[in-house]
Amino acid sequence: MAKLLEYNATLVAREDLEPTLAIFRLRPDTIERPETGPWFVPGQYVTIGMNREVVEGQDDPRPHSVRRPMSIASAPEDTGELEFYIRKVGEPESDLPLTHVMWPIAVGDRMYCRPVPTGHFTVEHTVGADDRRLKLCVAAGTGLAPFVSIARSRVRRDPKARLDDLAIVHGASHATGLGYREELEELARTNGLRYIPAVSRPNDDWTGWRGRAESICEVGRRAEAEAALGLAPGELRSDRVAVLICGLNGTIANTITGLLDRGFVPDNRKLRRVLEVEDDRPATVFWEQYDNTPVIDVKDETLVASLRRTLHTALGK
Image (cartoon, rainbow, N blue to C red; front, side):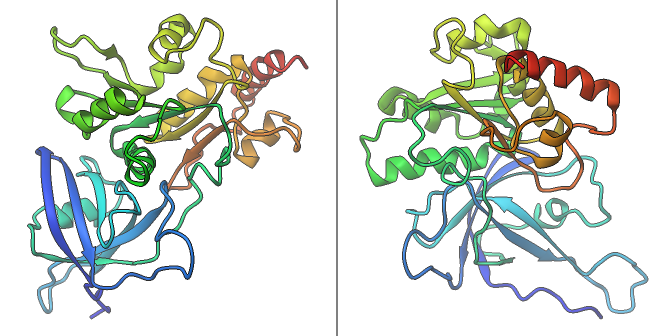
């Protein structure tokens, strides 16, 4: 039998928001800390995993274990524990989706957690810690996790920290899927966070933003978006705003393309190459992606030509 994962973490808390959406908090047995600096940087991820139950001699070709990277929602100041915002995959692409294996677990159960956070989807590695522009964080579903970590960390370090340079747009199908809503609304009241919950399938009584998270970047809703973000007309542009995206590929693609007319330049090398962006032009749109599927089909010449024209016009080329 193939080698199983050696469990080294305990589930210490679980909050089910919907039947397929939950917040999990793990406590690793040991933590590998750097000699200096924080345990991890907000925006990073770790790999967690589970073994599937295997009956000896069972004729089942699936792997005996599964591991997946998960963005951290907790702040590094929350010593000793890691929090994850996870949705059970409805139509899995693999034969052994991690979320299906871990969904039955309860507080006290054991899991695998590689205790070495990694990743470059951080403020420090994207726009830079000293950047004073508004950071527009566009999150679809559980893509909210890294942005919660970023906001939490600032307030953990200084309860009076101002979050006016952070705007979090979180999209969900229904209001019940807006995880961390109360916490983010409180940060909006007390610390100046610009928080916009977006619901794509709202009830009649929903008074907030209607539509997917990326609709905040639609050309046709530009005036509405700038007002919601607290920007003056015309201020949703790359010298005033930098954009970070986490979520589904469609969310990433639609956010990128929706902002090209305002001169927002993507970070991805392949996309920059086909859009004919100079190497020395700073990126203003960054995203977190765990798979290798291109968010935009760079082989679609018609699409690329249209996007290139839009961006070049905005850049005055």
